[in-house]
Structure formats: structure tokens, C-alpha cells
Length: 206
Image (tube, rainbow, N blue to C red; front, top):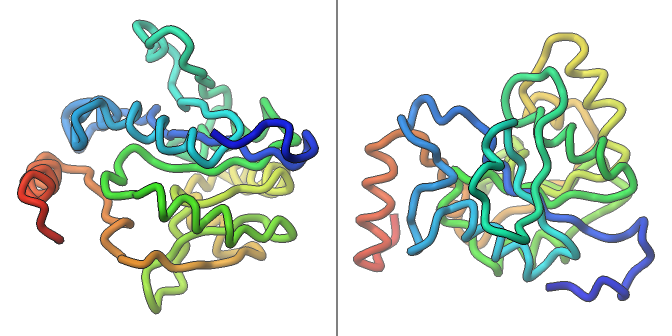
């Protein structure tokens, strides 16, 4: 875990595992799926501890029941649909912190990719986000959101819009690219879960 005394309080980087979704397409809680031998939300929590000063699970009310003792969590507290709720809630509850956000439906994210995101961070922008090679479309759920993102993101949601990608597309952000676009693969359906687990069990690329 990063040294919590290594930087001023307003420069600390917090980690957020987005795991509060309904998982309706998957048919079961995506945060509890096991790609790497442990529930995915725990796996990402451990990865983020390697690069962030503190890490939290982003949960909807009720999901906190049965959590392992000592696991930090934040409950969604904005009336917004989708992952933007978790991001806004984190920015609101710790307004001086930047947040490295990772969604639990990204099963192939590596520590190296998180380290690169931290190294490439531009805190003068609203966010630093990954995008596939050659693509102008940010992946908002594998990104660092700066404290300055809260007010415009809240205003964006107040218009009834909830897509974090569409929000970032209209803001001043920095795009970076992973060594492999596979790390941006989203698993949202049972067949995608089966596909990834099979590939991982055989050590094969996608």
C-alpha cells in the first residue's frame, strides 16, 4: 500500500472498487464472481491497496452486510442510476481526494496497469482515463477522477444524464492506453464470465 505520509492530505489517492450494481445482465452479483480464486471485489480491493493510500468498496445500501471485518466501504448516497452514483458518492464523502476507480466487471486489470495509470495521472485535468488503442472513448471505470470532477459531474446528473463516459467526453481529460486492450474487456453476461474463466484457467490470451 502507498505510504500515507508520502504526500499532502489533499494529494492522497484513494481507490474505489465499483461493486454496487444490480448485475441484472449477469444474473448474479458481479463483485462476488471468482476469476482469480477470490471474489472479484476483494481481488480488486487488494490490487488497489498496492497503489492507493486507502481503498473502499462502493456498495448500494444493504450490500455491506456480511463484509469481512476491516474492509472499508462507501454506500451510494446520490439519486443517480448506474456507476456514476458510486463515483459521485465517493467524491462527495471525501471531497479533497482523487479516486482511482475500477469496476468489478473488468476481470483482466493488472497491477501494472494500475501503476501506469497512477504514473500517467494529470491532476490538472478532470480525469485521467484508459482508452483502447486508437480510440477516443474513455473508459470511465478504469480512471482517476480528480476532486474537481464532482461539481460538473453532479450538474451533469442533474440534467437526467447518467453515463460517466458521456460526461468525460465533454470534459478536459487525459487519455492513456493499456499495454493490452484485453484489460478493458467488460464481463457483463454469463457467457462472458465463462469465456474469461476458461481463458484464465488455460493461461490463454483472449
